[in-house]
Figure 1 (cartoon, rainbow, N blue to C red):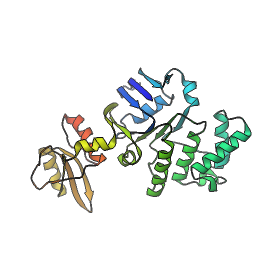
Figure 2: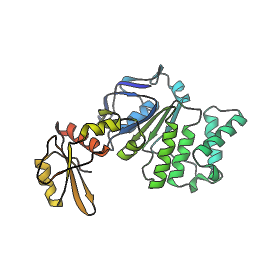
Figure 3: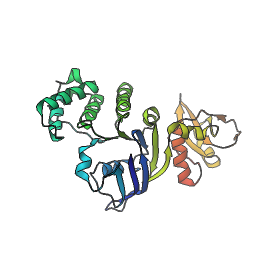
Length: 298
């Protein structure tokens, strides 16, 4: 269990990145979702011992993350948002190098570990290729391979599927799901679909504050029957935003579809919509912005 209590961080320029963050993250896949600039990367960097907090505490079971950094790093796997590689080195050689840095000094053990991770991440057949020739998805899978060195108890992945094509995204998420059966895996993302597909627990964060936590399916169920949709003309959207609790607008087949929150049938041609996690996300952001479900255009 990763327990975060009263964590705050303000940068030197006055920007408050985190404001009294409290989270309990159990073993398994945990999704941290929020818009760009919400504070996700700051939180991940603090947990990964790369950044100091101003106040608060973080415990991984009984281990004090903020004060026992070397011990944390021995059991931490981290795939940051920007993950660079040496383009002229093969995946096998680079992973062997990372294994040495992780403290795996026995050559035989290191060889077995590297081979196992390359097979697990479906990179065995391309282990001799230079990393500079890898696709985006292959690089992300290599990033997970290095994060798994040393059998970590905590794995952090920050925006891992941004820029991946649908096939690579699916392969990567399936890999994360398999890993998450035995350790704490934090998936930080602004892509709500990623959390819906693989996470058993989640939190929504914005402007440095945790707005909502829970199981994705339970959070969706809480909004069942309260989300309504209608196809409208583009120039009608502002009028609906001023008169209804519009939580999102999107284009579908060249037409504008608006979703609104209402606990009773709103009339005016609105039909009840099947609720999904994006509705939860946008309703939560809008509710905090105006103390009631409000406009949030996606």
